[in-house]
Image 1 (spheres, rainbow, N blue to C red):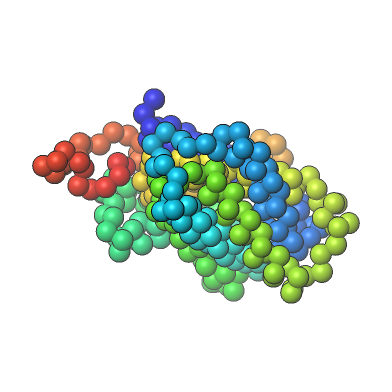
Image 2 (cartoon, helix red, strand yellow):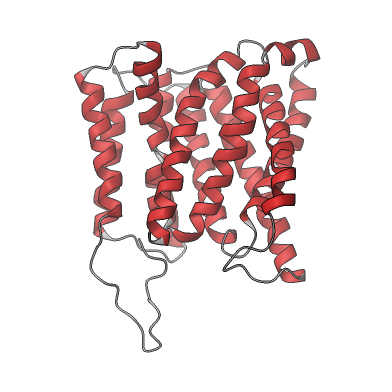
Length: 308
């Protein structure tokens, strides 16, 4: 199995975990505020990763030996990831209160476009195949998530900021994950996100232990699986895959959330939504099909950066 295929499978597993987490997120918000929910789930995620670091956190194959330079990259990468995760999650949690779930799902998925656009300014030029995949996935998301016409609301604008935040999060991971231990960087990002959430929780909310305990099941799932497992798998996988392709595969979370609702909760899945699911899956599969070999420089290294 190639490293790129392995990365794609890990990101698909991540999307499945995130898709199932929509139910946990909805139930959890019935008991606690958005910042209390974020604080709780990130603390659990950080605690879950501590023993994993002890057991599996040794230097991984292909990683540079730990030193001052590597330690600095780990700290900076973890802090930047945590800050981006906090901003994106906060805008999503608050924005979804003022817009429909369908609008939120579609607008959040726009990071599929934002990532390659930002990448252009960073010297990455996506291929025509990637742009075609993005177009197919965005159209698919429209059919999947948008059920009716409505004007752009405050909630829509907030969720658009969420999409920008997740785009930055993906690009930060792409920048730092090849240089550091992915499990350690993921653990740092959770504690940073938890600390930032705690500040806003104490300012804008009135958290109490009783409410947090009442929401223990959704918070535990979100913390241990959605955050602890999901975001860690994302960081590990992105070592070996193009960030635009990663954003496409991660966007499958919206597809899986609809499918989980259909299979587990008996929610109707119309022909329109099935068509949307098919388009998104087709776009993701297209990114994994082998393309023409990249041109190489005299030293034999690919001149266009990471493989698609």
